[in-house]
Structure formats: structure tokens, C-alpha cells
Length: 358
View 1: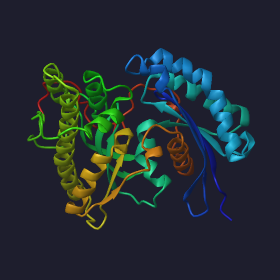
View 2: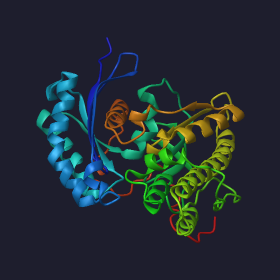
View 3: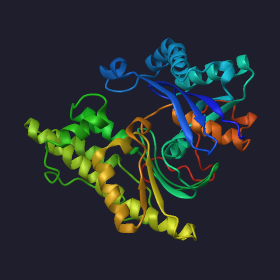
């Protein structure tokens, strides 16, 4: 009988301390035995954003307990594991080091393989935690630090067809929340207060919307929100601006996603295979989900969204990615360092900064 692989996953790339035990069933589907996430919202709330030194110190304080809790809930011990996977990048170096080093130590202590995982790959493969999904598929990865369109051809075979040239979508949400004094965390609060506003109140820019390709630019949108916020006279004006911002993001994503869908069709000859996955923290936004679900229906794509608990940073996706890499022996000694930047598509050009000719 085929052995059930069991992995410990550890995630500390930013401000969530997470550990998870995931077991692969004999039919290659996952069974999540535990998924523990400790948020640092209270620690960073008064600063309006993540402070790396505080995040790293909090990881150090919490990581032992979180891993112990994950093992306890799963009723597993280190000796029961087949391997340990930990996020090695991209992310905040001081934070990555915490989970990476304890993961490597636990693996050495238990004489288990240690597999460094790309955080973005964790998100890219996260739909597999709940859905039987086959390669290839189109992925929109939207989070606080990344916004990319990728064709997921196979494990370790990713083609980037679009990215942001400045702010990520989640970053634009967070900065808009700060501009409008909506509180922390920014993204969920923009969504919350946008429900109280009129999405058609403000006409906001959609940078590079008519340029070819599916690259994104959001810095100009954020700047216009700042400019218009100085003329706000009431709470209702604030809510209206939040709603208009969110609606503009939806328009941008809708337009650029449709371009990405066309690119996917040209790249993948089998047109019967058309799954569209949205992953990352921003994928939890209900209006964005609804907007993209409608677009999928129009373009004959199957929409796949992870459950909200798997949209944000979590260790279940890291454990699952570790299992997939272990099975195919895709883990190399050169990956055994933490990296602040670690693109999924190493051949993709680095597009970051204003004024680029696209």
C-alpha cells in the first residue's frame, strides 16, 4: 500500500506565525490534520503597518508554542513526520529566518528531509488543499506584496505573463486605508467601509489600462486617492472614496484578467483546460471574488478560490508544497538560504518602478 506522507509546514514570512501538519492520502489528496495561525494585528495596529523588528521578535516568542500546538492537535510527533517544509522567501529576512531556522533544526533533530519553500509557490499550489485541480491553470496571485498573472504549467514550471510595475493590489488597499484613516488591517477595512459608500461617487484613474499585456500599475490610483482625500468633508465622503477605490481596482483586475485569459488560451493548446485560480490575501475580498467569477462565466473559465483561511499566509500551503516537492525530489542545496526576493519565473523581467516603457 502507498505510504501516506506527513509533513510539518512552517510560515513566518511576514506577520503571521503559522504551523501545520498535512498528510497526503493514498489517492494523493491532502488531509489537513492541523493548521495553526497566530496573527500579529494587535502588535502592529498602532503603527498602521508591519514593523519588521517587532514581527521577528513576536515570531521568536510564539513559534515554539505554535509548532507544539500543531503537533498536539494532529496527534503527531516529530518522529512520525516524513519531512519538514518552511518558507525561505520571499519576505522579510528577519522574519523568514525564524521559521526557516527552527524548521531546519527540527528536521536535523528528527533526521528528516528539510525542504525550503517559495512562499509564492505555496499560494500557487494552495487550491490543491481543497480541490482536485490539474495542471495547467491560470493564476492571479494578489497579496500585500505581490500581484502577478502566472500560467501554472506544472510543479516548478511557472510562466509569468503579467505583474505590477509599482504597488501590489494588497499594498494599494493598505495604503488607501491609511490615507482614509480606516484602521488596520487595511484591506478588510476598506472592503468593510466601502459597503457604506457609493462606488460611483469618484472618478479615479486606471493607470496603463489600455496598454497591451496584463501588467498592472496602481501607484497613480493611490496618489489620486490621497489628493481627493484632502477634500473630504464627512464620513460619507470617506466611505464613498473607499467604495470608488475598490470599484476601480475591480475594473482594472477585470480588464487585465481578460487579457491574461486570452494569453493563456494562446499558450495552452488544449482549450478544454481552462481553470482560473485566484490566491493570496486579496482573494478573500468578496467583491473581487464576485467580479472575477462573473468574468470567468463570460470567458468559459472555471473559477477556483481557496477558502478564506487559505487565502492569507498559512502553513498548510507550505506543508502541501513541501510534500509535492519531496515526491518529485525537487529540493536543492542552493535553495537552503532565505531570500527577500525569489520570483517563481526566474526568466521573467524585473518590472518595478514608474516610468517603464511597457
